[in-house]
Amino acid sequence: MTAQTSAEAPTTPTLIGHVVGGARTAGSGTRRQDVLDPATGQVTGQVVLADQADVAAVVAGAVEAALPWSQTPLGRRAAVMFAFREQLVARTPELAATITAEHGKVLSDAAGEIGRGLEVVEFACGIPQLLKGEYSDQVASDVDVFSYREPLGVVAGITPFNFPAMVPLWMAPMAIATGNAFILKPSERDPSASLLIAQMWHDAGLSDGVFSVLQGDRVAVDGLLTHPDVDAVSFVGSTPIAQHVHATATAHRKRVQALGGAKNHAVVLADADLDLAATHLTAAAFGAAGERCMAVSVVLVADEVADALLDRLRTAALAVRVAPGTDPASDMGPVITRAAQQRIEEIVTEAVDAGARALVDGRGHTVAGYEGGFFVGPTVLDGVTTDMRAYAEEIFGPVLVVVRVSGLAEAVEVVNANPYGNGTALFTASGEAARTFQRSVHVGMIGINVPIPVPVGWHSFGGWKDSLFGESHVYGPEAVKFYTRGKVVTSRWPRAAAASFHFGRTTAS
Ligand code: NAD
Image 1 (cartoon, helix red, strand yellow):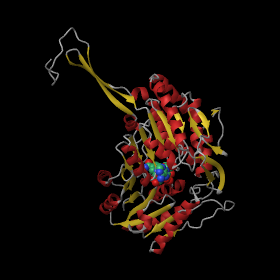
Image 2: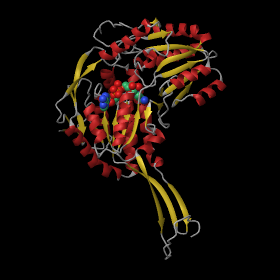
Image 3: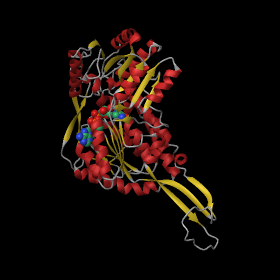
Image 4: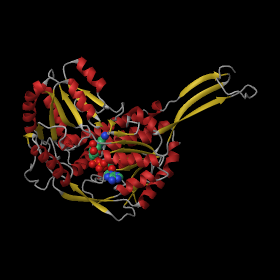
């Protein structure tokens, strides 16, 4: 193991390893996976894939760190959060460059995801206030009752490729501020951001072992899900893996929150401002190449304004500049892998073959000088029916599917018939329609003339139905409860009274 030293810029790492007990290590696992730059298709590094011994080592390091950290005074914990915030602000450009190099999103969007993570850190800075318990004085003669919350111990976060900084930052600040040791298992496709974040925690003064990184694939995940010393699991990723994580962790008696995939519908009513809707829908569908769990992927548009909206969407989609994320003029970078690019194009082809019309067709898109990159151009499909794969599956690419509906009532029916329930948006000028919509849809996060309603860091984030398994949403107030368990103390400091054998309402004594 080598000691974790000052800032290293992992933009072109050769070997991307774990962080165990505060030290970087390649561990004992011998499997490796290539990490690529999606803009060029070139291999830029190799990530180590954990074996069972690596899982055991990282959990042992976290267990050792958890107890002293849980006993660390609240003010000191808050001070580490403030210092981590400073690290994150100062090193945003470095972290954004690391994200873009492996994920491919444009630099401004990478900085944007760090900004959304920063909100959670800022919420966690208020941990002394958030952990204040409740006190009932004199519930009976000389008897007081107070309740408060204690950390769980060791908690794990398993995160997806599409937000290599934001999603870990949804979890780690809250888990750590509440007094736990946190193990991050990042996506093996863009793992380097995790090492820079670990360095920032170190430089913020966090004790070794309180934030650890375990690189790997299914072996690492299943090792964490079944390890007896892991007390809780936060997962964000696709629905099939979320179900696996929820079922396995629950069977091993862990607390678990598992956020899954999405198919987010935006509804455009006849009274909507169509220019505003088209501008926002274009950004929401094609930003980050559609690789956002809250991306708008379906537009349900009222028949009478459908053609007018489609005209605007077509113009806006054609104006999207597709180029590597490092190009300051780029609106949209590549998708994550060659396999993702091929799958997205295949779904579009199937829809077109089944009768959909590609108003804008991003298949076969190339960028001069980056012919090896995994680019897909913005695609707008009209005339899609709900039985087509383009509607039924989460595409996770820059494809906007348009379905025409008669009005609000049919739109609500379509939204509610969909198995996912992450986000949805309504574009309208009617407060009455907005209120009906927000109260009728079976979806966790709703935008009214706001296309991507990701809650700010002091609310909590979570979908319904196949978008979340478990009861608890991530970050915000729900995270304080998720990462802690309650204790209630009933105490008597008697004035030489006799003990009572009566068990009942305490008002009589
Ligand atoms: P993914 O499910 O393939 O991977 C997520 C994590 O699970 C990774 O760390 C990966 O290593 C691990 N994993 C993959 N296969 C596994 C297996 N068989 N067993 C155990 N672990 C496994 O997801 P992804 O492709 O990285 O991310 C995209 C998905 O994440 C999309 O479906 C997207 O909607 C979803 N997502 C959801 C949210 C949300 O808030 N609901 C946020 C971001 C992403």
